[in-house]
Amino acid sequence: MSIAAIDRCLTILEALAGQREPVELTDLAARLGMPASTVHRTLTTLADRGWVTQPSDTQRYSLSLRMSTLAFRNLDARAVPDVVQTLLDKLAHETREYCRVAIVEGEDLVWVARAQGAVSGLRYDPDMGQEIVLHATANGKAWLATLSDEDAVRIVSARGFKTHRPLGPNSATSAEELLERLAETRARGFAISNEEAEAGASAVAVPFYRSPQEGAPIAGTLSVAGPSMRITPDSYEELADILRRAAMEISEIWSIRSRQKDYQWIGASAAR
Image (cartoon, rainbow, N blue to C red):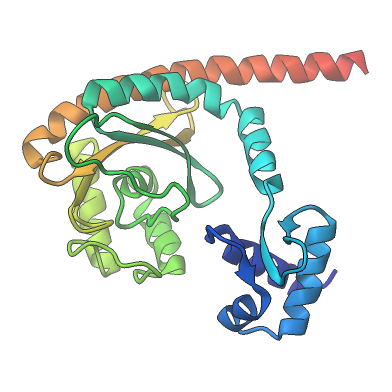
């Protein structure tokens, strides 16, 4: 399989992932700027492998649940859901706001779990499928602040300060602004996003580590987010304290669960 074919396949999968309804072949081809015949051949292969479904007698396509199944299998192998969900639910109940966990994946962050704590009034409930804009989100800055300035700027510059979706009015637009905000994050001890990722929304975030030991590698970030009318500067410190306690709990359980997974793997290998 050529590099071009792999790139084309991944582009089509990513395009279908954002669709609620099956997409017409011609519409998909036009949107991606690809010949319809090429898109059709790729979709046929994906359908044969079970990655794409096509209702009978139509030229409409959608993703199957195979990708979701593999994603959950991967998360389970990493001990993510069972480690964080109970704690995340407790955090959401305590803060009465929307709470999320993201894990470090190479040089990026990926959402893996959420819990909604708002029970009345205005609710902040963003799409978990959205890319984490590192320079504009509290989670992104909480992670970037643990890196050197050089690495942080390199990672963000590779993605660019402009995004496919609109950001909030306060988002950083240059490396200089980013470095200033990362310095503030380190001095403060936690990250904030005040109408940066999107208008009307604010968040507070902290990192958590693979174990409570000093020098342990970072595993991910934990955040509380909600409408800016509720997540105000007066509440930042209190939310940060709550997040730090939750992050320590996650780090402690993360290290224990990871060792259990290692023991299971070693035991299974020995049995073979």
